[in-house]
Image 1 (cartoon, rainbow, N blue to C red):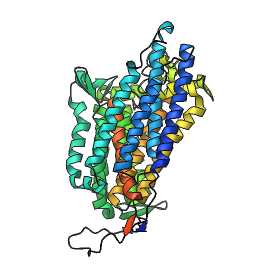
Image 2 (image 1 turned 30 degrees about the vertical axis):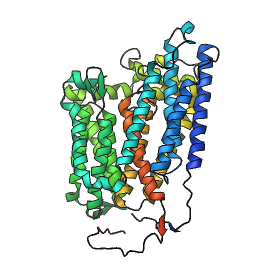
Image 3 (image 1 turned 120 degrees about the vertical axis):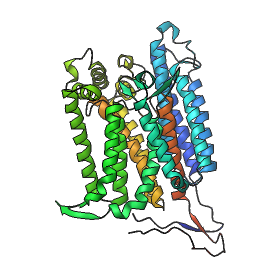
Image 4 (image 1 turned 90 degrees about the horizontal axis):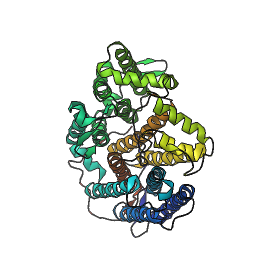
Amino acid sequence: MLSPPPRTIPAGVRVPTRRNAELVMVLFAMTIVTFYTATMELALVGHLPADFFVLPVLLTMVFVGAHVVVRILVPYADPAILPCVALLNGLGVMFLRRLDLGDAKVADRAGLSNFGGLAFHQLTWTVVALVVAVVALIVVRDHRSLSRYAYTLGLIGIILMMLPAVLPAKFSEVNGAKLWIRVGGFQIQPGEFAKLLLLCLISYYLVRKREVLSLASRRFAGIDFPRGRDLGPVLVVWVLSLMVLVFEKDLGTSLLYFGLFVVTLYIATERVSWLIIGLLLFFGGSTLAYFLGAAIGGPFANFYLRVTIWLDPFGDPTNKGYQLVQSLLGLGTGGIFGAGPGSGNPGLVPFVENDFIFAGFGEEVGLFGLTALLLVYLVIVERGLRAALAVRDSFGKLVAGGLSFTLGLQIFVMVGGITGLIPLTGQTTPFLSAGGSSLMANWLLVALLLRISDAARRPATVGESKAPVKLTGMATEVIR
């Protein structure tokens, strides 16, 4: 993959970092969050409480603090990523506040404390997630250093991915999917972090094997297909993803792992044939799991049930299909412009604070508002892909491209599930859904994107050093 030449700037010339533009956009994002909060509280309480601004102000302080950290640690990072994430995260916290108010009696809503309930819990997790992201930026001063520990990180990722599958159901199963580690009142979803660790291993492997995997065996329908001997890694990841589907009973996570590998492989080799092979393998494995679920049940029963509900959610609208039916009815009720913040009934959708928060938003902001949210996600993905194109090392390209695709695929899987496009997967909505594991993992994803974006946008200064460059022992790379 050809990299653009680095920008060379004469020594002493100041290069704009766009941090002031980032600060303005963060403040604008918080203005939108504050306006949403005021409209929502006015609809639910009947008047605007004197303390309605408490949570928006706290969020503004948190994200301005994040901006200051970015200004110091990654001054050349893309200025659009942090404001977009701050907007989504802020709206997520305030929608949870809307659910807290909706659950309270009308007479008690005006006096409902801001320092409790789902909203404050999510705000606390936001602070924790940002601290984790800052630590990651401090520790990972150069994204290329991750390649030195690729195998160790990959091994930890595989352990985290498979751990819920081997634990007893009482320690790992929630709503039919074995994705958690639960001890007492504490629970964590290790797969959220596993995808980031596995991406480092996948990227390192593909950097080393890219030329081999790019070789073609035969041409069919105008497409060059790889040699049979090179299918081994894809088949291994395919088997692992099917194991996640069967033993952890989760289609979304299985699709995420396999899709991440195949798309990263496509980015590395630029062979469309890998995408075709990946799609055929995944749909073939899913079809096999469905028919095995219908025939023998067992570990395939949960997947069979989800597909059955997807095919006919109104066949059992008050029991098995209730969640999807309520989601579809809520989206239909919202129409184009929605009922307005605080004027809908999102509480009728089970688990609206987690898997179905996008459906809850849809009822109140309508198709227009949901499209705006999707465009914000699209900006983050596009900026991540831009960083992947601009960064000058192959490892960084694959990591940034993989991170961007992971976020985009998770959004597709989530939206597809709540709209009936694909079977329900149980995937959370990044930055919007309640929960600490997803929030921390996605802020780590953002931290890595900021680090790679900083490396991609940082200019090479001419005249910084007069010392000769030693080439002995330096790694070389073939660029075609």
